Length: 164
Length: 402
Image (cartoon, rainbow over all chains, first blue to last red; front, top):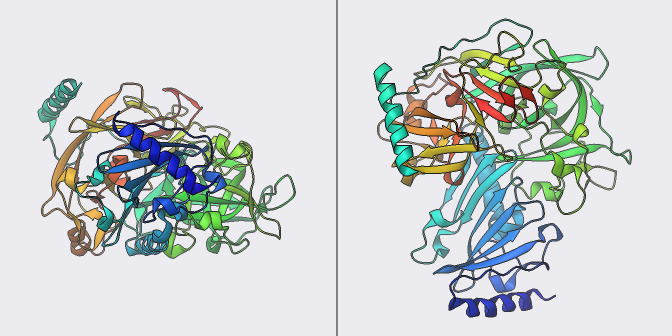
């Protein structure tokens, strides 16, 4: 199945749903998945371990693509009207594949996480607040929750507290 | 509901006012004792740790022996962590040879365990472990920072490795939380529902396997012959920064005269290891207690009105010390209790107390999960952690009580 065609199906369904308010679409096939900062129509190839149900809901300024992994972890990608993933959020017993969902921002995330380990020793939530990348990751063994977004890419009027 | 919560808060404050000031630093009304003797009592110390620069870390020592042998070693400066389960030891701190666990195919087993701040990677080995008078024979544990097996891509894709003394600040992590194993049933399954924590490592490289519960890295407490249903962490009240403080890790709940629940309130814990904390009528149901978190990580800057520190986004730096009150609640059992806490300017704490490593008012933001009640929560409060599935005098775990 072409990833592109998969998205087009969602898009037309989305248009259909605009009149009725909220759209819930469940697929049992491999979901299209784009990482942070990526264009939703040029998604990277699907990863077998992320296969699961995809649900799309439309908010005023963006669409939320929610993927429920078979291991229970839920990843939500926030897609702007221009088709860019400007934020991702996750929640579950296990961390998602961070490289996949942070895409081009993963290396920055990894470097910042490494730097914080030794900045002031101690274990705590991870708070990365850079001009080009914000990551807030918390929880503990068997319960992880977090969000990441690119400040410059936030659609106007989006409340970052709603990204979760 | 909001009214009821507000009324409860009012009542709790009114009651607290009768005895002490409401909204002051965490006032604890139950008489608190710290056990210092008994075969189930292990001394712990909050100090600068193995790397000499750890803030709010509780450390202890464990004895590890090659299974069935007298080849033993005592490892000190191991972080006492109720936020995880299982013993993890830095390979650089290990001088005895332990027994490598092997898979059904005869290959060495290794593990990738994600923490929030990074992952630990390394072989699963077994040891006879002793802490105080309690023995966990043939305990599967993780040796981290070992160069025996290259880190698989699926593991390093989770973040940054915590594989050195500089990154960990401890010689190991003693996970004695509510879970019996670090992964549990999910890792014993095959296919897409397996989160992929356990690997077997033939010469061709490490690949994910399913790992039986009994083989998993697990809470050492459940392997004790007695006092195996949970732990108590007992630390004294701390009101100002200190160089170090000492306390006890007591094994068992209601199994000895020194570990009775008495008047402690039981807060049950959900399947994710969380309970509820309510602040200003908003319930945060992914809240938890974790001795391995080195501060009180609560809410956000916008919710608390406190900025983070200019040089550290992970701590709060209010202009003056701020007092808060929140209500902790069981995940389902309806119990609740008010917790008062104070948050000081972290930069001032560090700069004004350069020789201190114990900070009762160290706090930071926590974004989505609400309240991470870290080590300062334990100061002046005996905290019971009952392991899932274990029977105690207060019912079956998992729960926290204080």
